[in-house]
Each structure stands twice: as C-alpha cells, then as structure tokens.
Amino acid sequence: MNSNVDQRKPRLVFFQWDHQPNANAAGYLLLHMQQQVKCLATHFDVVVINRDCDYAEICDKHEPDLTLFESGYRSHGSHRIKITNTNTHFAVPKLGLHNADPWCDRRAGFLSDMEQWGIETYFAIATMTPEYMPAVKENLFVWPNFIDPEVYRDYGQQKVIPVTLTGQAYGLYPWRQTVFPMIRDRYPCLVSPQHAYESKLASQLLSGEAYARALNASLLVPTCGTMGGEVVRKHFEIPGARACLVTERTAAVEAAGFVDMENGVFVDSRNVVERLDYLFAHPDEIERITTAGHSLIHSRHTLRHRPQIYQWFMLNRGLQFGEKIIQSGPFADLAKVKRSSKQESVHIVGEASDRVLLKQGDLLLEEGKVEEAKQCYARCLDYVSYLPEAKFRLAICALQEGDADRAHDLLVDLVKVTMTEYGAINPDPVEWAYFLLSLICRGQFERARRLQDFYPSLSHDEFRRARLVISQLSRSGEGSVSGRYGRDRRSIHQIPERSDSEWLARFSDILERCHQPDLANVLRAAPIGGSGTDEKPASLRFKRDASWRLRLYSGVDGLMIKLRLNRLRPNVPPLPEFRYLWHLARGLVPQSQRGLLRRIRMALSRPPVGTGN
Image (cartoon, rainbow, N blue to C red; front, side, top):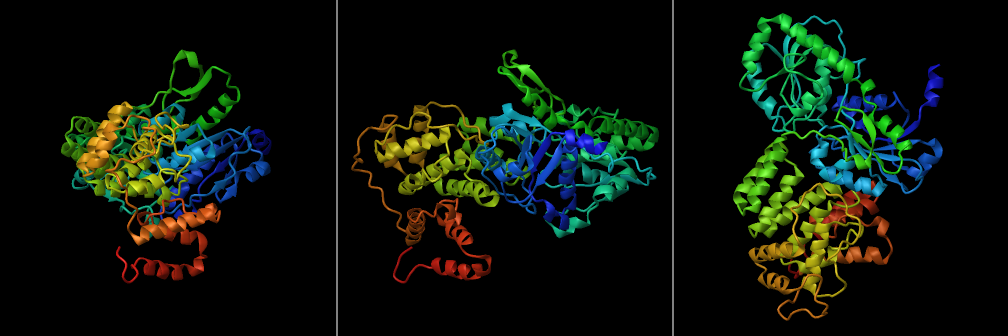
C-alpha cells in the first residue's frame, strides 16, 4: 500500500550539499539536514544528490518533476557541490533553497548561484530572510523550521531539572547574553557548553533523542532568536519535547502562534527573575503553559506542517497568465491570486537590531556625519562580525574620509568571501563596483580599467556607474555606458537612489578627498556618457603598475587567455591580494605536488636582485 502511494508522489531531485563531515563535529547539523529530506518526503519521492554532478545527466536518469538546489550555507564542515550543465531540461521547474541565517555573508554567493543556475524562485528556512534580501523578496517564500515529532515528544521523563540553558550566547544572542547569567546565578541549572560548529568538542553536545529527553526532563528552558528576532529550531524543540519555553517577545515568535503566559513565557532582563520566581511558586502554571505549548507545536510546527514547497509545485503547475503565487505569512500556506488584485506575500517586518543600526547609520551618512555613521556600522559587527552590509558601509565611510586604502582592504575582504571562501562564479555587483572605484581612489586607474570586464556577465546599475567613471577618465569614447547594459545581477546591498549627475558629483568629491584632484576635475568637467574624443587630457598620464609582481600576475593571466585555458583560470582577479597564483596552482598542480608549489610561491614573493618592488 505505502509503496503504491509513494509511486504516485511527484519526484523531487534535491541537490543538497554534502553535510556528512559534520558527523564528527556538530552532528546535530547533519540531523537537521536529514530532517529536511524527511519533511520533503512527506509529499515527494525524494532523490538526494550530494556530490558534484551534471544536471542534465541527473535529470535524464531520474526524470524529476521538480528540482531543488540548496545554496548559501555557511558551515565550514559541509561540502558545497558543483553542478554543471544546468541550462537544460527547461520543462522541469527549479527552486533555490537558502538554507542559512538571514544575515549570512554567503548571501551574495547564493544570488550568484541562482543566476548561474537560472533559478528565479526561492525558499528560505528563516522567517526574516526577505528583510535581509529585499532585492528578491517578491519571489521568496518561507519554508520555516520545524521538528521531527518522533524525536521531540513527551518521553514521560520526571521533571528533575529546574532550568536548562543550551545554545550559543555570544554577541549574536544579546538576549541570552543578558538573561542567561541572571538565571544561572539564581536557579539550579543544567548548562550545556558552547562549542563552535566545526569544533570536535561539538560532537560531545547532546543531540537528537538524548537532547530531547534532557528537554523533557526540564521545567523551564530559555532561548531566543538572535539579534534578528528570528524563530530558531529551539523555539519548537523545547515545547515539542514538553518543556516550558521562556523566550523574548518578537514579531516572528508571535507569528508562530506563541502567546505570553498561555503557551510560552515572554521575558526580558527587567522581569525575568520576577516571572521565574512566580512560575516556580506556581507549578500548576508551568504545567498549564507547558501543555499548551506542546499542543501548539504538534498541531502546527512538525515536519507534517511544512507543505509549502509541495504547494508551490502544485500551484505553479496550473498557473495561468495573469496569476501569481503568494504566501500570507511565514508559516502560512501558499495561494494563487490574480496579479491585478495587488495582493503580495506578507513578510515579517521585525526590529532586527542590525537593520535598525544600519538605517540609523545611513541617515547619519546622508547628513554628512561620517564618524557617527561609522559607530552605528561598527556596532552591527558586535552582533555579527562578518556582516557584509556593515563592512560595505564602513568602506563607503572610508572613501568619504579619504582613506582609500582602508576602503580597498574592506572591499577585498568582501569579494574574497564570495569568490574564494564560498566559491561563487562572480561577486556581488555592488561590492565589485566599489572595489574598482577604490582602486581609482588609490591612483590605480589602469588596474581598475583592466579589471572592469573580468566578470563579463556581471551587470548592475552601480557597476554601470563605475564603468562610466572609467570611461570618463579614460576619454576612450568607446560607446556610451550611461544606459543599462543587461539584466541586473541582484545585490544584497541597497544603494540610495540618485541621478547619474548627482552620483558623479559625489564621487568627484570622494576623489578629491582621496588626493586625486586631477581625476576629480576631469570627472566634474566631462559630460555624462563620454566626450567622444580619443585624447586624454594633458594632465592625465596614467602610469603602468610599477610592481614587477603585479606585471607578473597580469602577464600570467594574459597567457592563460592566449592559450585558451580559460577553464583553468582562477575566478579571482590577477592580483596578489586575491592570491591569484595560489588559486591557479591549485587548479593546475595535483595535491601531491602542492608542497613544491608553496616553495615556488615563497620564492616569487621575494623580488629579484636589483629590482624595486
């Protein structure tokens, strides 16, 4: 009977990363990924592909009705698979899965993957992701976290633990940082150690049934959803295992159905002791709230209550011209509506602490209060040390202050995260545009001019403006770049809307502050779209890169192109700050010979006798 039912299910091929390495560290991460497959299997015949593969071959072999691509994950243990030949089998719909935190610094890589694979509709596991990727929120749905009811259930354990404190409590979790010590110092607690995901010590943490049983033996278990006000798995695991959830009041938590003192307890640093004293003095209240929370989870938040991907598949199959699919809330079902109805998906608009600080900083920056804006952006990094929006804005502040070197370093780091740490095919277009602009501000115009076409498929209005600056300063007259030149690559950054003339005037001022007055004057005098003359002004004589190392890098890259070895070229600019030669060697040299390569690279790092650097 079951096998016949399974045969009638639509087939889903899930291109999932290889998460098996986490088994030796944070094994619960591997369990999470296995539970996602189990959830999908409630509606689909799921085929998991977690190795490098050819998309066309996989489709020919498995004949899927739908394909799902995991992307944007940050764990250092998991292996990102390579998928080629995705521009085939157009009849098979494709979905992207952003399986990561909303603020993750791999979001630019996710957007690059989606463009490369031709995917225009996405699901995210985090309820706040639309607020962190507004460029794609119209095509972004939420497939929220859930529990496996076979694991998180009432085991009938005796309630011998007054409070269990579990989970990370560093800067990303300001509520836990404040509340956990207040609870730990007043009540008997079971305290779980805090180990990083990639640490081997993480393998010693409770997970799966052992973790669920520990929760089941606890009366109260506090958790929070980070500075972003997210709903994390713990929000469901705790009441799902029949413990009383103590948490922070957020829009996302309330959207999940939690109500203070009914099925959960909302506290902050001002009232946590008063609330917990009351609860311990009234055990019947704990029992009532615990029972209601357990009922909420098992009626709304198990893997059987997450049909959103299946709903999209069914709705999309019958979608007519003039119709679209929307989601009325992060935990809601998907529905089909007329485009003319103006109905849109309803996303949570929370008060994520980093978003608040970014907005404050942006207002201060517009008012010219650069130092105060920097303080706001720096405070964002106290929550998430790698937050790309904060780092990008600090680079803008550095340019405003005339510190082109600082801006360059920040932008190099951002591009490296996407290109080398994540391995995307191209960087965020706004970050790349401002990297080129930072080179110009450092007086390295020729370098910027050579690199402007390094990622030929990259397109964005801000990148167009960077190319416009290069065109104006070079006076090449090689066509106008004042209009858009292709479909925009989506960016994680939001740039204030300005006309080209206003934008160019602002950048001219930045050039002046960065000690490039000649470039600033030329840019102010040049008409938008190029002057049409091939002659450079007499005052502008751009120098070649003087360093022999830079000429070497450029020459090697040029040789790779001449020899038609583009497939072996590193996907990073031919510059030492991007470790171009190291990446080239990894592609050319077998692993057994990479020690020799390191010695060669060290030799190349020393200038030849009699040569200046």
